[in-house]
Image (cartoon, rainbow, N blue to C red; front, side, top):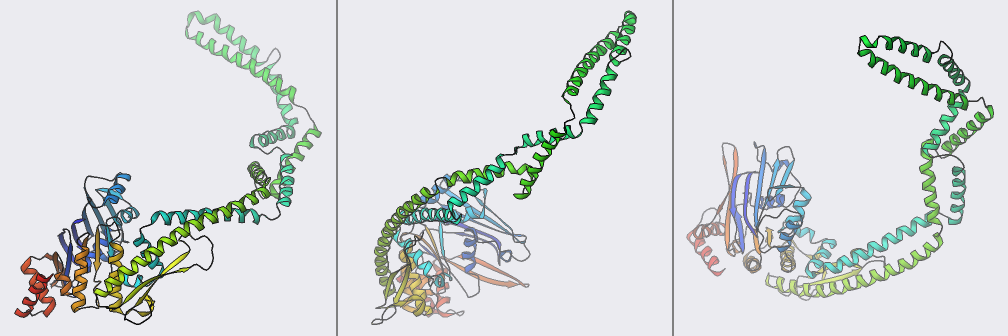
Length: 552
């Protein structure tokens, strides 16, 4: 239940604090005063897209917050726990809208995404704006309302899951068939693999082949370099001999300078390194040989690798991964014929599972459709459409392809007057009739819902007199089990409220501001009298307002 709504620098509202209780709270005011701004504020707190125009002129940002008690919202409390955002029995939603169009949102002081805010607020508050009447004319929305009234999410989930499983199998079968003749594909893949497997393609083998090519291609230069180095390291005047002579000379004088021992140790290490270098150099020289045939063979291998790379339009270092991918595809085609047969059997099974799930969903919809028709017919009869009849029909889809939403779509029919056959709602309802039918459907469906706070924005448009009184009575009755907020311009509806706020607008020094005031008993009489009689309130209007309040 909504406890408090705080608004700062929002549209033409500089600052407003509204406290709410249980039952029906009505919000009234002159035309253009900004009554619907309160609904808009709740809409932004429910995840509506940020709008820079919502920020009050001259301000840098608008700040909105709403405090909810969670005692009557167990699903919301569970969502908070699941998302580690719980903080006791009260929840605070906050949204800041910036003048540049950006926004931020918080739940219980922790930053959340707009999607999270919308998902969570949908468990707390349901807003029925003036656009809802037009949405009611859409068949998709009518099916959604019927499912809401039926309260069968498990049946919907079963139909959706079965349809998705069938579609996945169908797509796999189509992909398998799109490969063409499986036997021909297998032969082609095997041929490609035979060509690729005949060459060293992995990075290590390619690197070794390239190194071997460089060694053979430069064998003469390598041999000359090794011979020259070996000559420098051998003989009486070679580096090792001269190094040994240097060491002997230093050793004779080391007794007079201790640091010469360190130099001798370094030269000893150098002598060892020279000896090892000579040994390795001799080994390398022994491995070198001028072999034109080996060089030609290596070049042929490199040419074949380059040819394969061009053929497959890849770099040489990508051929190994391509070969592995072809091998996996070939493996998948080994039992392709058997897989197709299994897919056909699985598709038939998935179709049967969807048929069963869709049949159960259809049966629940038919039962709910009859109950919804009875409930709405009874409601519109009390809303000034005596003898009117509301019906729900289910039209089957054109084929039996598994549909995640079931095998039919709902359509609402209405007969506004006795003796007239029911016709689609979108074709027959006038503006005033649509308002009443919309309210009746919303009251009937939301009475089944779990959302604790319902907001109605001028759903009483186009009606008046006794019908308005009946609408007020229905909203008040709904307020017995749910918290209801209603923006209204009808005095009969306003009188039905358990509490009332008045919205007024003033202009001073070219600055327009809207104020929101909670009304006491006297204030309600004055406000309802204004709604009855206009700007000049007469004693008769006050008396009539008092009677309306007493009768409510």
